[in-house]
Structures are given as structure tokens and as C-alpha cells.
Image (cartoon, rainbow, N blue to C red):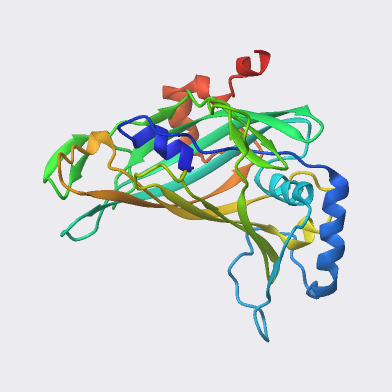
Length: 305
């Protein structure tokens, strides 16, 4: 999401952050063995049984680490994507944007509903190439209805709220060393900052994405991504269901017309990984099928170059 919001809302060119990696099933087996000693009696197979309190006793919360970079990447890829050599991955989400203007009350300004739709292909033993797009439609912050204009509570002006359509992402490489955007100079990878945690019947991958050291603009993102513990512990499952929630900070989008008012944006999102466009909610699917049907499939031409 950080790279997405940077491209959508930053007013100037800034260094790109990195992207994705690869995995193999045997590495998942090592994780399964490590977790089995603290497996609860009633592991749920449903990733959405997330924040329910246990029937009795203490909440289970155990942090576990992957010493081997390939094992870590395998765990991430099963949750975030799919261990298949080639696959589509669809993430559907809602997010709410807030204006944080210095000396002003923090105000919610708009909601969005959207998708991140990408494809990956294994290009080396432990390296995947990933490419995709995003499209988000604006919704009213209170009623939730689709809109094309919105009131800016700081400037007290009506502004045009257009869909955010991002189709020019250069893509990335995802390997044991981390992620590497294809528009980055050189071949360096940025390691992923992911903390894995057992929470009762789920596994959480808690990730922080930070900007490069020389990037002096307000960007940071953190997310909690979860899946079923019993499914995670089954190494035969290459693609796991995933729920996600997180927050990020980024500069004012241009369309808000904030002028020289100092401050930035804050946003929170929640969503889940779907198995395909056939699972999109009816209202969203009707909107994208009407306005942007070409984005119901991933453009695969970059993989031909």
C-alpha cells in the first residue's frame, strides 16, 4: 500500500520502496514443526475468526521468528500471495482518509473502496516477478455512497474526488533478500520487516514499511495480516486466506487543494484476499464492470518483456 499511496498522492518524484519474494514448500515444514508444541486444542480453520476472545483462560500470544530468509519468505508468500509458480492475487479493501493539518482538529474527509490486482511469475529458483494495478472508487465519509465531489472541512471548499487508478507500477522482484522495485537503480533488495505472531487460532504477520533514509517526506505504513493457524500449519496449502488491516501517513493528495497549509494525511484500511473477481461485492463489481472493465484482469504484457 505504501508504494501505491506514494504514486497516487505525492506531488513530486521520490525514491521507490521495494517489493516481493519467493518460497518453497519444505521451508514451510520447518515452521509447522516449531509451532506444533504450542498448538491450541481448538485450532479454527477460518481466518475470519479473528478477534474473538477465548472461551476461557488467557489469550495465546506467541512471537516466532524465521532464521532462514527462505523460510521467512515462504511464510510471507503463503499468506500474502500464493506459492504457485504463476498466479493472480486479488486484494479487496476499504480505507478512510483523515486530514491532519497543523493547529486544526483532525477531520475525516473521504472513504475509498478498491482492489489491488496483481500477477506473479517465478523467474528463478527463489525469485518471483510481480506486476499489477489498483483501482479505488471514492465514497462519502458518513453515508458510504459513491461520490464524485467531497467537502474539504479544512479549506471549506468542495473538491472533485476522482477514482484512483494506478496502472503504471513498474512491478517488483520478491526473493529471500526482500523486495526490489523494477524501477530501482541496481539490483539491491530491501529486507521485509515482518513480525510473526500466534494469537489464539490465527497467525499474524505484522509488517512495517518505512521509506528510504534520504526520503524526507511523511510516508510510513504498518499492517497486520492474518490467516487461520490450522491452515498455516498445513504445509500442503500453498495459498492461504488472509485478512488485513493497517494504517499509513502520506502527503496531501493534490485533489484536496490544501495550498500551503502545513500537515499531512492519515489513513486506515481493512480488507481481505479474494480468490478472484467473482468474489467481489456486488456493488463494487457493478461499478468496475461499468466504468473500468479492462481492470477486471491483470495486464500480462510486462511479463513478456
